[in-house]
Length: 140
Image (cartoon, rainbow, N blue to C red; front, side, top):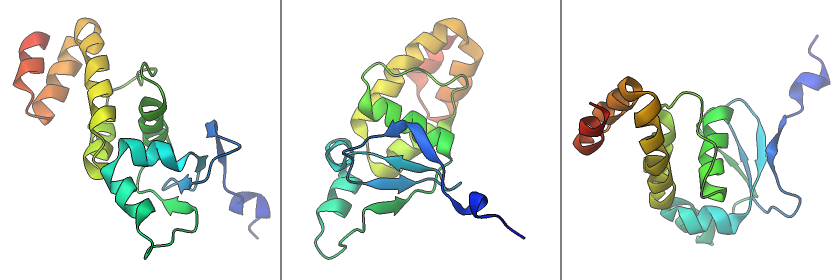
């Protein structure tokens, strides 16, 4: 018999703003409380979605991303100098593409310059996935 404990969504401790007006929910069911102005200011997709009166969002949005990826994505949205994930994965930049977040993408690419120095092979592989010849050359 399933317990009610399993049905209660987990909250993200890092992204649990008291005055937040939007609640993205990751594919694992983790709840993030964020500000609509941050989503709209960083993403044309969210701007159109949240400004469209025909959609009338309920305040919660299902996000097709893992909790870890979405948390890193939000970190780069909220902080100019966010903590780099322990392993860079193209999924975070894929979220930037999906939601058209040019500012977040630029912040991530800036942090990748540090990865080139510490993990050149990982940076080279990452650059090859994104056809970034400039980064690939620096990694070599």
